[in-house]
Image 1 (cartoon, rainbow, N blue to C red):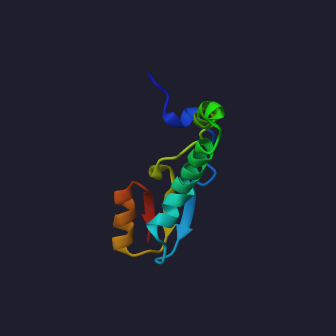
Image 2 (image 1 turned 30 degrees about the vertical axis):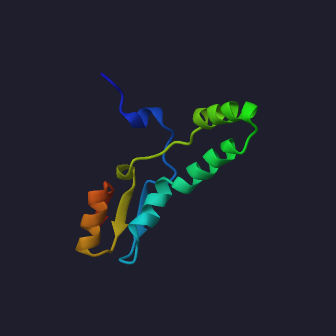
Image 3 (image 1 turned 120 degrees about the horizontal axis):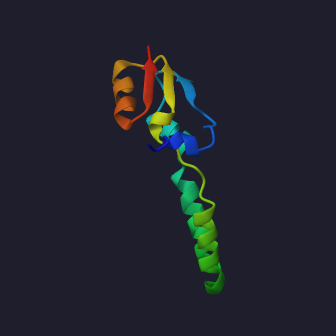
Length: 97
């Protein structure tokens, strides 16, 4: 029997967040994953001299930060039914009133 993925990861820094009806899904997504961070790190490796580039890329891969699935974040608070459906469709755990 395999252990759940959570058994291999450190505890999530943010597991639950309370929102209002003005929350934008992109704000919640960025709590778990910032694509610009990946972009900057990769571009930094490309700026290295040719001989160091491979080592820099290897270090980037070996030290890649933990990324969480959207379902790892529970969204609670007060938002409209349409927003709750939208967040659930994206994969977030939703407990909205």
